[in-house]
Image (cartoon, rainbow over the protein chains, first blue to last red):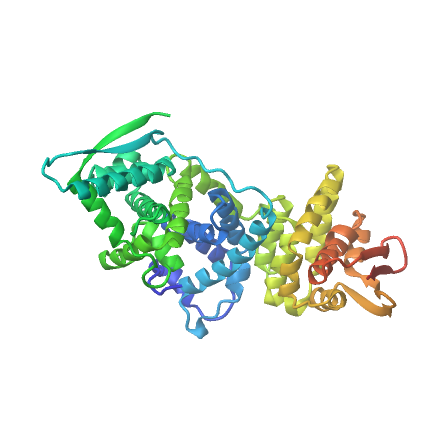
Length: 216
Length: 277
């Protein structure tokens, strides 16, 4: 885990972390559980579990694992030794990674033979888009015009096979020229999500075009 | 399905062609770390860090798939349900009143108390309790304390009173089989024989003895702390749920296809006798 993870700033908690020895009281453990339940930290840990779970598992599974970790935190804290020079937050993350790795492995194993969960596509407009060329310059090179026509034909065919969530973001950005913020607002998703969908859409299209014999 | 026509001009097509030509076929740099993934979704990266992450994501389908999953699943923690979820999580880590009081002389460490609380509230299984015990260094040295066994007996008796013991045993067995390999790894068990020897050493609840047989071995045991405590409390038999199913799960994990036959238990006979082939 990178050192860039923000260490706790609360003075009381810091005092707990730096205390030598292993005598963690119930109150201290509760304080740490409370601290871990703070929104940002909880979000961080939940997302960490989600990464460990793999691509088919849900937020509910992640939440269960965090709940179990909070319940077992005393056991983890018992083995913390500040003498080893590790920051408590980093130490806790490592323990949590190990803990959720074990639990996630069991969950993955349990669902191994099940079909992947079908994900809701969202509320985006479910329609195909098809690009057609408007000849803006009558003196254009006929060879180039033919190549354009072929390219658009291939691209349209690739776009047809894409999920709407990728299709829409590609159209809004690379055809309509909207900014990422405008796209995120229009699709009611976050900017990082819009960006990631765009990156995926482009890679998928490039792969599809390559399969159709285009050098991209 | 409707088809929407979009008109594009030659310059736009050139831009698209250039765009696809500019895509890298192989990812730049190493894959993103867990920390980068999470901070990207939390919009917590500095401008330079973000630029670097975007650069990698542009070229890496694997990382974008993970990132997209993370971004979409994490929306489950936003919006109106978030506080309810937070409350539910908080309840799970607040320990039940009956084990909350600190007792300096208690042989059960507070961490285990918290877990036992979860077990009593049927929030955590016996199997996960055992897994947690194994992770605890204190218990590795001391074995399972009597107070732990008493609480387990109370919970199992309550399951029996509610006529759900059978159902719980089946569910636990499924989990025990599933987590057998994990338990084997934690206890460094590599053969079915070691299941008996390591369980004796680690939990200090029984003393299993091994006698080789033609097609495997027979394990026998004449003393069991679980049996003693459960009998004293007039509770139901702990044999299957607390011990045998757990051992069977580990034995089958280390040697798939092995046969694990329980021929007698100390609960009914003078010795436990398990044949493994």
